[in-house]
Image (cartoon, rainbow, N blue to C red; front, side, top):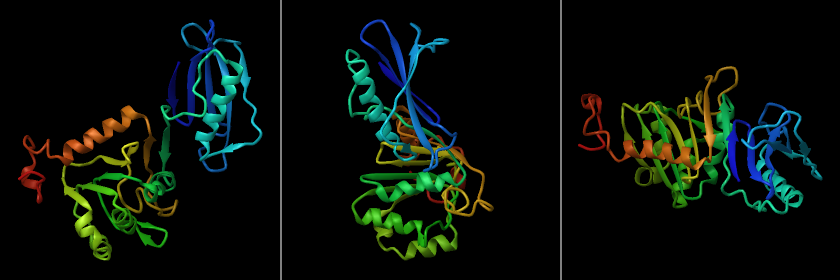
Length: 268
């Protein structure tokens, strides 16, 4: 029994308690992860090496309603429950996918819809790493206003950036006094990674800076072409956090060969 994530698809591998091996696959019926994409599920027969069998059995899983983008977790639970009824000796976990992973390819404006949209729902901590940083808006509010809201609720917000922000960003910053004392921030000119970690459970890493044209809501006609990965795979989240934390804690400072370019060293 086990699981394996693919981009835009979720797979769960299991033995049926006898001699058979199977895979539950949940995937969009159109190669899109928009809110209007219908997701489907099926069970596929595998060979002893856990590979697909040519002309093997495929068992479509029918549900009373369609599952749309954003309801993938509900579909996973429903698929597991159906499979459990079909294979009662398999010992499948019913109504629990807490150990399963989501790995999603994020392109262009999906950065705003899928990544930035998660910020207001942070429950414990938000870590942000970016090379460039500019004034970024969410609707008619500065992104810094969302960070101020999180800090006011007692959430931990950490920010690593490589460049000094511009005057518009600094003006927005001054509008929220809580940022002066509550926002944990360090500057490192060597940082070129773009990482966001939500509650130590979900991570984004990719090309998009914390700017309107990068991760923000800028028009599809004028924004940057960006790409990244959004995942709750524990191994990937941990790797992103370890890289972030190594810079944050100053572990790289001692052997750094660019100290003369660092205007505000993490470790003096």
